Image (cartoon, rainbow, N blue to C red):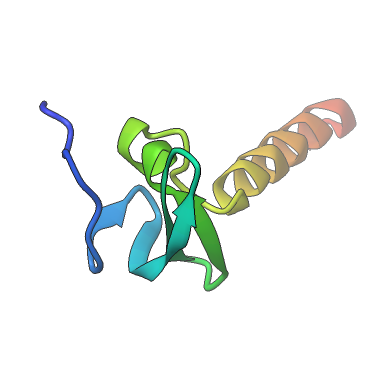
Length: 78
């Protein structure tokens, strides 16, 4: 699947929805994005295009919580 060549408002990148351009930095453009969990953060366009940023970190936290719960159930024998 070819990757997109540019970021535009309204596009989705993983759990992130691009809201608006936030400004520039030395190597590109900054974008304000809203995650499915509701948090709003600024991301570099390069990170969105390469997939390095796909969420605000909420997906990682949910995955860790699920693993921890599964591990605890195994240890207790539930």
